[in-house]
Length: 297
Image (cartoon, rainbow, N blue to C red; front, side, top):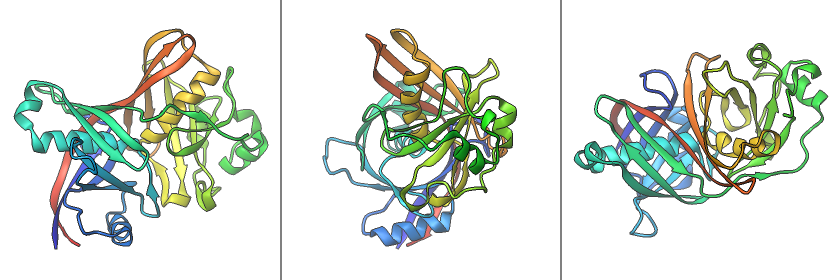
């Protein structure tokens, strides 16, 4: 059966940057094994399969696969699919106003807003379906450093220390002392994400234009390095609230990722803080349509 698909670059306004995403638009009848096979064929960080929603009030249901496993939630597939579905289903409305979509993922229902301003790239953002949670204790600093090919003194800056956190998918967050140390981190020294362990999200303070710069390694998921990782940014909100909590009010942080691998990505993380606690968070960015076609599946 021929099934329509699109390829997008997400978290960028420029083609051939950001994080590539394949979206299979007609996925009814595909079983889990077939979806995994198709994801390996596309061989991108993630492939999304669009299905009818369980609740007919909602926009669509998504299944999200890396080349090696299914994910219950992921940020760049959510942003990309929301922008694409709005663009395909209601282009005239999208040109006139922002559109609200509700996407069903394994983690739950996700409210998304898509927009397309005149002369600008498609864009979307979503509200986290659940707030981040801090996990069990991280490995010792010396072990993290060795697995990254770094020295222990490269780990940590300010109040930031390693921590495990999740907002649907768990990550080990490793703050690095400088952008130079971030550039030296080796994705091949350890199989991050294998055997049920977390992938690693390394980050350093930004250069002034951005809040932070990051890299994510997950060879155990079939992703040596990811250009942009929305699910990690979602959990990153929990790490920030532990080590660098902003004051009450609304805050917008910009995180660059993928720079070291030649796929620069820019992710917007919105935080809403009340009474010193995180009450809501959003993930957003721009989307560029790259290719379309059909796949025999």
